[in-house]
Length: 328
Image (cartoon, rainbow, N blue to C red):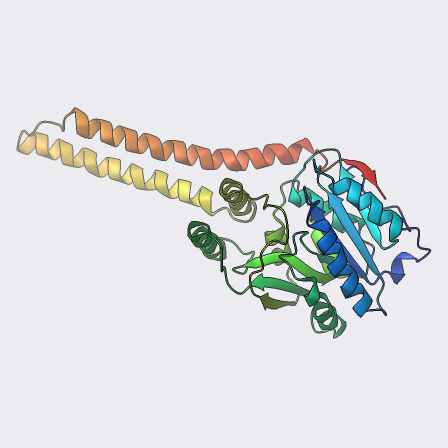
């Protein structure tokens, strides 16, 4: 278990309520969200007030923020016994923040929501009602459209989801968000996957269970700036592909077999042309083109192998997924 995990703490909120009385735990990863948090907290309080028969806990995970995020969390945690926070010793990334929050959650239903209000908290009562019906184990959300998103980013995102649908068994929906509410059984199944290299969207889908999908229109960030650059999303997509598919390794093998076959055919052609027609072997420019092309393919395949080897290397180190500096 990661350093600082509160798994042995029965009642960290100080409310006098046993863990069994916590109906809904909401995990909120935060990284430099000082401007957005007051708006989010106000919305969460409205949702809580609209569901007076359920006991909430809000678990904010400060992922090494450099602004006033932690200071704000300290203030609301002192004022509201439903609020808990976990602060990392540095920035470990959103995946680590999700893991820490899920490990700390005490509710019989556990949810995940972003801090920027691009995930509408107003959907939580509907999600809760679906779980309480007993028909569903998880209620997840997806964006119905990508209105306002840059064209290139939108196209690449759609290509990624289509690619994942073909090469993996994770079954990630196009436009799927981390925003969801799940039963304790689903949460425990997710936590049982103890890998260091985590890709939550894939993990959420891989564990299965009956999942209801809710669609909502794209919502702009309430305040602050997104922490995801195009390059960051590209690297994250590679993490997802290597975490839930071995197709790139198969692709490297196919390239190897293909070029072995092409080389044999080209050798036969050159020998025949030389013996029968006396044609000279192709000159320097064509030779260099072939060498550079095959060399590029080899480096590409070695890079694929390196990605998987790096994953194995990080897993064998057995480092904690995060380190907690402060929590309440």
